[in-house]
Image (cartoon, rainbow, N blue to C red; front, side):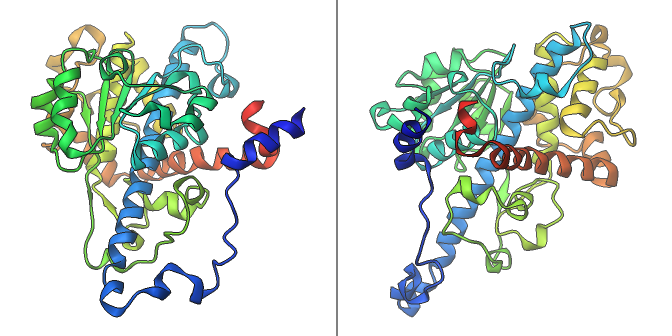
Length: 366
């Protein structure tokens, strides 16, 4: 039976080996003339963009999911254990939605299932052609064409549509986005200020990605798909907002985006009715490996006259993206906080490789 399952899965799940990889005469670039070769940088940029966006989004979904598991465990008299964070049948799973499943959306879905430990039953995809997503449906992902249904039932919604479709999608879902839902946009053409206006929510994340002529000269392997690329820890660190390999990156991430992840995580914790002390505990456990030095304090987020009866206010992520904060200053100047964030970022992807080495091809069935 196990053999039959492997044979059935092999056609779609096993990455084929590229036997032409080291044969220059058979590579894509060999057929290009000098003028066409000048455009190869666009291919590199596009690939690096997708890898960077998918990696950051997968990491973000993972920390939100882990925070929800820790919250449930905090309410239990039992001692918190690593097992509760790794159970596939989570007690309070993160509900993830993806609107649009073209190149970026489909790659994101695969990354969430592979590295983000998102259970297929907790992932929904809304697209105009759900019948083309047979691979995801066979995994157990609910694929349909109903943006309102998806937005109203998800804890985080990833918008992966073309710029020309954003206004239509926004008009559909703006009155159906719960206040606790985080909207995460991959649409570069729309600023967070514009998204705030058309979606009528302030709980918005959008990665701030740029590139320069110098950064585009850095090496980057475009031959690998996103899932395979993320098995390389160097590639993963190049996508980290606080990573140490900035000089080697093709795509540059503004460190402000790492700070926004922190505020977005606190917003979710507050929506779970946690007090400030518990929010900070979860923040340091999920994002900073529970370090003992340089921990962020309540005063880094709010002033004393904003006590809010023991809970954090709901932070306006759009406003946070536009101002300098104490959190930004603390993280940018603290070697302990930056190192802990990077370690947590890398660990998520390393854990998948360890499970893969231990359990082999059938790891998703255990």
